[in-house]
Length: 246
Image 1 (cartoon, rainbow, N blue to C red):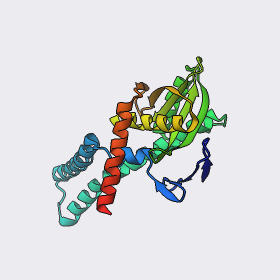
Image 2: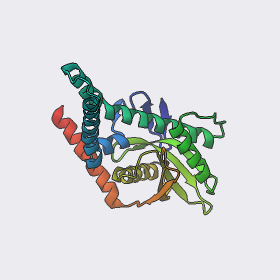
Image 3: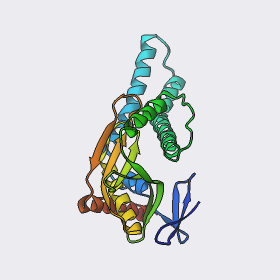
């Protein structure tokens, strides 16, 4: 899809591949940079320990039930365990995508159909309860961005205007915690938005909607040069690794 930005730049975005292009060239995305340019120790450890724990539990259960542990059984246990994290992350991503689409449709005034998935319902109810307490006016929803100076692109969730006419950048998350890469993402969005529009963002918020917890988490994110430079560092690491391996 083609987007004409306020500064006249033409940005193309392909939804299935999550690919941005300007002038026919692929442009790295904000989330791609923070995913591949940062060490995520907690995620890495989970992707190791979760499959091991699952395999251990299944083997112990088979021993307890006195079932034979032949080669096929073990291969299946290990294969299922190996794919378990991918399945969990894929489902979590699907929940996040649905919740984002619900928020977008709601803020655009569209009717929201009843949802069935308990995780989606929980996130959605938390957002509604929080939003109804705010005095925000939506200005941009799912806005595409491109930094001409630093050559990256992305899609911010929401920019709103508060009652003092200040612009507030809001990022909706359905993850289990607010992690460091979110800070870099929001600083990257802020820089690209201000570069394109000349409008200043006064503050940034991460609104985390848990999939099962009944308590929303809203955290103000610092906007400063140090965190933006950290984002640029992650971009440099990612592009350097890609150049090395290619």
